[in-house]
Length: 477
Image (cartoon, rainbow, N blue to C red; front, side):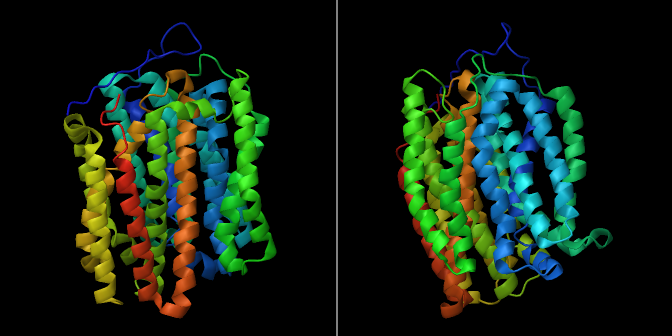
C-alpha cells in the first residue's frame, strides 16, 4: 500500500511562514525530547543505591519516581498551551534551562525529601520543554520532511526509554569522582548547556495563529484527575493502602467527569479549552491515543520490574542489569531506521505485525525467566529482548505519527500536549500497576513466579495493543 502524506498549510502568528526546521534544529529538539524520557527511566537501576545512601524508605523511593512522572504528566498540556501563546522556542529554551537547574538540584540533594522536591520540579520543567518539540515539528515541516521528523521523534522516544536504564547502570557503577548515584542527574547539566547553545541558533520561533488564554478551570481539573488516580496507585502499596488512597481513587471518576464537562462547555462556547473535546473527532488521533495507553503501560511496567528483578533477585549489579536490555535498544534503533520505508510500502499494517513480534519476544523472556532463574542476564534474555525490540520499533514511531497526522498546524501545541500527556500518564500508570503487582506478589510467590506472572499480564496487554492496532487508518494522511 502506498502512503500518501498531505499537510495543511503552515500558519503562525505572522503573515509569513516560519523558517523550515533544518537538520541541526531537528537534532536539537530531539535532544530536548530525549532528556525527559531518559530521566524517567534512568533512576530505576539507581534506586537501591539512593536508598542506601540517603536512608530512604521504599515509599520515599517510589516518590522519587512518581513525583517526577506525576508532575510531568499533570503539566504537559499546559506546557503545550503556553508554547502556543508565548512562542514555542521561548518555552523550549526556558524549559530546558529549568531542566538543567533542577537536575543540578537533584544531583546535589542532601536528603531524600529534598531529592523528591527537586524531582517534582524537574518533572514540571520537562513539561514546559517537551510539548514544544512536537509543536515545532508540526509547524515547521511538511510532507516527507514531516514524516521523517516524526519517525525520528518516535525512534528517539523509544530508544531514550531503554537507553536511560542502561545509562543509569553505567553511571552508578562508574562512580565518577565519587558521585555515585548523583551522576545520573548531574550528567544532564552539560547536555543542557549544549542544547541551549544549539537551540538559540537553530530552532525557529513559532506560535499559534490564534493563541488562546490559559484555561484555568480545565488546568486544575485535569491536574486533579491525574493526581487522584496516579498518586494512590503509586504510593498505596508502600503506605499500606491507608484511607486516603481509597478516597482519592473514589474521587477520580468525579474529577474526570467534571473536567470533561467543563471542557465540552468551553468548546461549544467557541473558546479553546485545555483539551478540546472536538479534537477527538479526528479518528486517527482518537484511535492512536487509545493504542498508546496499553503500549506505554506495558513498556514502563516491564522496565521497572526487570530492573528490580535483575538486581534484587538475580543479584546483578547496576551495569549488568542495565546492559541486559542492550539487545532491545540496539534492535529497536535498527528497526526504527527501516520504519519509514516499511510504512510507505505497507501503511499502518506494520503495527499489528510489530505487536505480534513484541508478544513473541515477551514470551521468550518469560520462558527464560522460568527456566534460568536466578541465572538471568544478558545471554538468557538476548533472544527475547531482540525480538521484542523489533516489535516495539514497528509500533511506537508509527503510532505517534498517526496521532498527529491530521491535527491542524494551529493546534499543534494542544495536540502534542494531549499525546505526550497520554503517553506520560500511561508510563507512570505502568510503574504504579505492574510494579505494584510484582512487588505485592513477591513475598508470597517468590521473585521468579512473581516476575513470570507479571510478564504474562503484560503479554495480555500486548495482545490488546495488537487488536487495537487493527482499527488504525490504513494510511497516514
